[in-house]
Length: 177
Ligand code: ADP
Image (cartoon, rainbow, N blue to C red; front, side):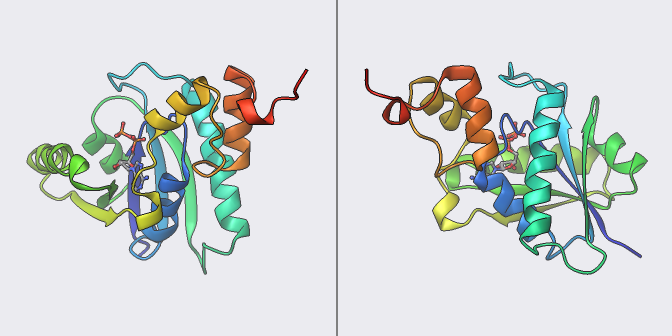
């Protein structure tokens, strides 16, 4: 039987940190459902559809890089309501979450605990962020792009383009008058 895992998040926008977790999730999953949470309390920069489009493009990059072997499959979805309900409806046995430094730990453990109370059959699998991606967060990427910083080291080129379309190109890329 294929092992189905769900990687939920805001992905506003998807970063190289997310991409790395998606890639390594295939060490435990055969099918990975990357799921944009629609009812997050955060006010997003990108719409759900835009975030899904960016995730699909990211999945395509992973496919082309050879990260998906054999019958491995990646799906991009969005969901409202409880993650445990979405997981059950999709036959997923576990949730994938990425863990950066200590700051993620408390929140992630609490969320895993709540989900385990709601559905004891659903496990949370934590994948440690790679050292080079420890400090990448969607929030900082948006902040940097908004202020004219170059974000090419933190996101894929298509995401950098989407950010440039919102905020204008990075300052050092702009042509001098
Ligand atoms: P959420 O709003 O649910 O925190 P995010 O899109 O910020 O959604 O993150 C989704 C998941 O990806 C979380 O488990 C988060 O810890 C993880 N994550 C985010 N950035 C990174 C990164 N740079 N490296 C590893 N995991 C990350």
